Length: 337
Length: 198
Image (tube, rainbow over all chains, first blue to last red):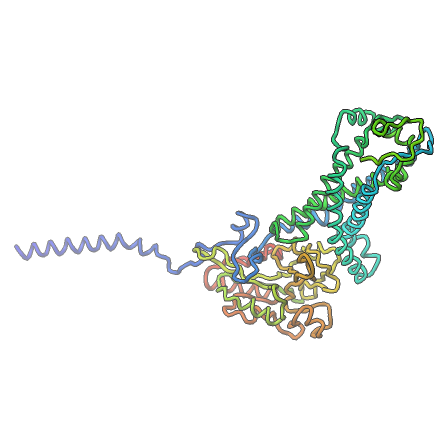
């Protein structure tokens, strides 16, 4: 009996052991024959999907080089080579075309009642200095900036590449260094003329009558009419924007990384070409567009009849302040503030 | 004619930075500039990979497209080079480059950019091959001597491959087949608009 019991125990154990082994078999079959070290590895495609750029860590001191890939540069490239050239070309050439057509159609806006021969001070020496400092810088900045955008397709084919590079190098220096007096000029313009450039009811009336540009209308205006106020705010806001974004590009990595610089360039370039277009109109109206306008910034004085026609309310103000009778000759009118 | 390319087998790179050092030494690259660097992604985490990166000598190179003075040119071997005589240091190629390759020595006031410097695939510049002027501006011209870029030549694990694109792609494909895995040719899609099927 004892031997039979031992036999049963042996068979039971054997079956149990076999059963356990059979159970365990599929588990061992699931073990990979080879380790795949790539199972958890980062992949380029997945990283791009997450951030559209790949950032890692470097052991060299230049931490900015830890950006492995940034294909966003391609969008920027398209902006710089295609979009910007269209925006700049259309706005600048478009403005020139409008001005030429306007000049041919309207001609110079004359002082209708003729020159009175008497003048009134419009801009002080300091105001004119600030204006011309900013204007000179602006023209050089505009030409050197347009050279970066349009020089390669337009100017480079005409001269040899060494000469073009030499000129562009100097243009770059001028662009960088003249940004400082330009920015100072924009700040001074902002402070110096803010009082006369707050929009008011007179501007609505002025704008409704189209500024008197068509026909012989002369809507009343204080020291600055609505058109000049628009120019003022374009200079202040546009100038502020180009200065801020320009310095971001001039001091790379001080404020932002590469995406920030691409964005800064886009804002800088678009604002700048629109700025150039607007300034063409400003130059037009200040020179061949209107009789007696240039001398305001030139000598600082304007003819009384010019003031009466274009800035009637300002003239009244000035006369009231100085107690001048219109009919009396006034050799020493106080400069406009 | 061969179309020269770089390929970094990220599954082999051990981030030893020998390529970085070799490059700096071979070309006497100025202080503060690294033509090649090793970037580690997911450092210290499972699945960490290191990639050695420099100028990839792109097809239809973005740097050349945006350069305002047109100072870039592509050699017969497909290597993208530039002229430091024409470069004005404006920084545009740096904005456009997907790989952060162009670098500028800080010169003068305000940290303004000097002439751009980047990997030349050890192929020098527009000056006469092997001349002193070429060496001073661009470093050694190994390609003219029949040698491949030093970074790849002395890579300890042969992770970094440099040479004819078709040949190195074939080597990489063979590796992937043999070992059974591969995380792909980093940067190839961006630089050459192609991948190596693995």
